[in-house]
Structures are given as structure tokens and as C-alpha cells.
Image (cartoon, rainbow over all chains, first blue to last red):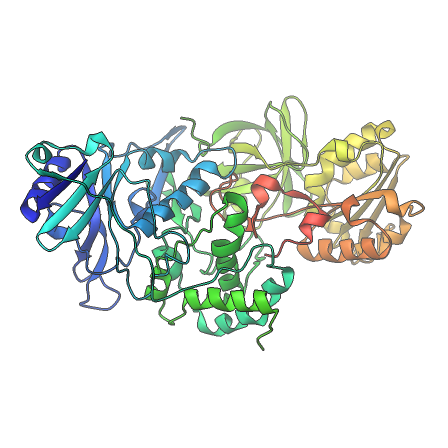
Amino acid sequence: MGYKLSNTGFNEYIQQLKERYRLFAPVLESKKGKFAQTDVIAYGEIEKFDDMILESKSYYSPKEIFFPIRETLFYFMKDTIETPKINEKPVIIFIRPCDLNGIRRLDSIFLKNGEEVDFYYLRRRELVKFIMIECLEGFDTCFCVSMNSNIALDYDAVIRVEENVVSLKVVDDKLEAPVLSNTDKVEFEPEFIKENKVKVTIPNVDLVSKETFNNDIWKEYTSRCIACGRCNTSCITCSCYTMQDVKLSDDKSIGERRRVWAGCHVDGFSDMAGGHNFRDKNGERMRYKTMHKVNDFYKRFDEHMCVGCGRCDDVCPEYISFSKCINKLNEIVEEGKNYD
Amino acid sequence: MTNPYLPIPYKILEVRQETDIDYTYKVAYSGQLIGGQFMEISIPGVGEAPISICGFDDKSLEMTIRKVGRLTDQIFSLKKDDTLYMRGPYGNGFDLEKFRGKDVAFIAGGTGLAPVRKTIDYFIRNKDEVKNLEVLIGFKSPSDQLFVDDIKRWSVDNNITVTVDQGDENWTKETGLITKHITKLDLSDVKNKVAVVVGPPIMMKFTTLELIKKGFQEENIWVSFERKMSCGIGKCGHCKIDETYVCLEGPVFNYVKAKTLID
């Protein structure tokens, strides 16, 4: 059912949802930007409609809401192992179509890659519902249309935010609320962005060869990339992590095992015991990430991993553009052209 | 919902020294295993790491562990009757069917002998199941030798070659890199001969190249990869090579597939 609400009306809807859900949306994190005294837009819990920041892209993706940066898997206490409880109050995430498509990629890795289902991912993920934010303009670095991720249909509700008016379509009955029964009912279907400023062409996976992997285009990134991993941490689809054990008590009888986000650009990602490392050069790491995002993942799940949110371009301190990299990759695959 | 990350405590039945830095741990365990699979072993509060299973029977499994890091340093302080935490087994392992009725050569370098030890031992005990069996093992030096008792037992009435890169005055077996000794294998029907190559990346690379030069068919060569699997269940991403997850589709690969994998 579609509704048309005033800003006050929509805020009331949020208040009523808040009784049953924790609501997350892009918010302004004051003074938490990458430089002193600067702000950053990231996903956070909102109290009211006004807290939502919609005029800019969030620096970080919403993945950390159900795939935390650091997550305790269990506590050790002498001979017992205890899995911590989590906040089981359901969650609503206000999300753009690209990110919603990105979450399906995360689901593929955590729930469908291999026979085992990721216990920790699933128990948080099951609590989540999505209210999609209609996104018709995009931002400078977005290339969702090229990645076929501009359209998302698996939302539980969707909103269009205009000046003083919020249109709402509720798909999941659980997201109905008393305020809506006194609200104007309208027909509302979301529209989707049709064109971005940035366009990429993904090379045909059947044409990607061993030569593509060994091509000289990757060398450029060895000198440019500083292996900071910002592209990994801001990415909606980067899902890698590392196990970490920590002792919590002085007598070492209490400890915990956690998992923490890991990034394929960051030193140590492929280190093995004894010191062997598989991708020493940063250009090799760029190649590894790029091929995962626009080639390897496709072969397992029939869709590319990258959703074109463009955050990696936004956050890179060396101004490395992933969309430009994809286009270069396509050129060498198409033409067999070798950049020296 | 089952939680695949939960480690289970197991009792250590025996600790055996192999070298100054390699010890074999025998752990009480019952369950289906395949040689070449691995376990995620851990000490709570210290860490977790993937370790190959190098032997097993109905009631126990064995793992040979080299002291190379924080976790393995701590494991070295464990003794008989202590507890070791494990989860697994993970990976495909060596499918015996691939070798039954064949002329097979096992070629192992250093700790690479561990993942393939159980499979070698099986065919040594069941020699009628293969057409011909040869084993070529290389170590850095005489003091780096692993499974000395096994090798002694295997060598009775079998074609076992042991070489070290650098011998000493007491060394009576072969010397030189493993690739130098491939000619010692029976290559009379090389087109149908099957080879299993396990060892450090550089050893596997040059050994497989040498085998192909000698006339081995790519599809008759099997290798086993070592990567840093954090989860063992296809989630953490550390062992991914191209679209392949070593923990899920490996660690044992046919060379036709293995040669296409670029880290």
C-alpha cells in the first residue's frame, strides 16, 4: 500500500517503528571525519527523521550493522565456551538500491558459499528489514547502472523523499504502523536511476585469460596504492575477516575469539606461518580485488560482486579510481592491448 | 542453528618429536576422515590455525606441527593428556579412487610429506590396490627428516627414494634437489603414470614442470595447496585464488586446474 506523508507524519511513522525496531540510516558523525575537525556520514541509529542524511553518500556502507568490524564469536572461561547474546530487537536499515543489491552479495558469501551457513552473520541478518531510499540522481562516483545494481526489488518498504513530502510503499505488513491508517493513500512505485555520469564496461568473463592477470596495467597500482585498505572497509561487498584470540584476564583463564574485518589490500592478508606471502606488491592486490569484484565472484554466483556504489573511489587517499580500473581492464581484454 | 565456528576439546594421546621444530600430536578423535584434509586447531586465547591431518585410525588422528608462530609456539608446551581444541575436518583430501589400479609416484618435499603421509601409508599397506608405487621424498638436511620410522618401514620392499639438499658426513642416502631424482622413477609408461606432488610452492612449481618435461600428462598430476584459511568454510576469503576457495574445492587439486590458479 502506498502512502503520502508530511515530514511530521513520516517522523511519527519512524517513532512508531522505533517501538518495535532499531532504525539505522546515514547520519552525520560529528568530528569523526578523516581529518581533524571534519565530519563523516556513516550508518548510525536514528532517533528522528531529521537525523537521516540523504543529500550525500555515506562514507561507510551499512554492512557493519550486521557484520560488525569486530565481533566476539565466543568467550573462553576455563573449560567452557560461551557464545555471547546479541541485541535481538529487530532492525530496519534505510538503504539505497545499490547497497541493497550489495547485501545480496554478502548473503551469497556468508550463507551460500560452501555447505556451512555462517551462524554469526545469519543471526544478525535475520533481524534486518530494509526500507529502500529511492535514488534517482546518484553521486559523482556512482556507476550502479553499469553494474545492473541500480534496480532493487527485494525491499520491505520504500520511500521517496521530496521537500515536505515523503511517499511510502509498504510491502511487508510488519512495517505498517497506526499513523498510516490516518494517512492519504496513494499509488506509489519507486523509480530507479537510469544513467550515471560514470560508466564502466565489464569484460566478458570468458575472455579474461591468464594474460589479463599478468598484464602490465596492474604495475601502476604498485606505485600508487599505499595498502591502507580504505577501499575494503568502505565497500558494501567486501566480506573478508580474520580470526583473532584475545586474553581478557590477568591469569589468562578468560579470553575471547573474535573475527575482525580483513582487507586484501592490507599487509598480512595472505601471510602464512613461516612468512610466505602471496601478493607482496600492491598492484597484485589491486588485481586480486578487481578480479574478485568483476570476474571471480560472477563465476560462483552469476552476478558481479561490485555494485558500483563508488565508495572506494570516494575514500582512496591516492585518488585511485576503481571505475577507471575496470575500464582499463576491459580495454586490455577486448584488444589484447599491453600497457607498458 | 549449528555454529560451525565452535571448537571442540580433544585429548592429546601422544606427542612425538620429529625434528627440533616439528612435533607430531596424536589426538583422540573418531569420525570420517580422508588423508589430505585439514583441521582448524586452536588454543583458547592464543589463536587458531589450519593444520593438515597426517594420519588417522578409528580412534585418533595425527598432525605434525612446525613451530613457526604464536599458536604453534604455545602448542609445543602441550603434553600428553592436555587438551587441544579443533574443528573440522575441512577440504577434499586425496580421493583413493584416483589412484587405485594406477602406477603412482608420491613426491613430497619437507612438511609437504605430512598431508600425503596417510595416503602413502595406505597404499604401502594395500599394495595390491595399485599397479606400481614409488615414493620420492626430499628434505633440506638430514636433521629436517620427518616420519623417520615410517620411511624406514616403507623402505622395506618398496621403491622409496629419500634425498636431502645438503647431506652431512653420516648421510648415506641421496643428495640434491628432488627434481634431480625424478629420473629414478619408473618412467616406462609415463603417459599413464600418476604423480602426487606436495611441498613448498617453489618445490611444487619446479617439480610439476619437470614431470611434464618428462612426459607426464597434466591430468595425471595432483598437488595440494597450503593457504592461510581463517575459517575453513568458505567465508573468510583468505584462501581464495581466482574463483576457487582452497578450503572448499581443495586443498588437493588436479594440475589441469592448479596451473590456472593465480594468487
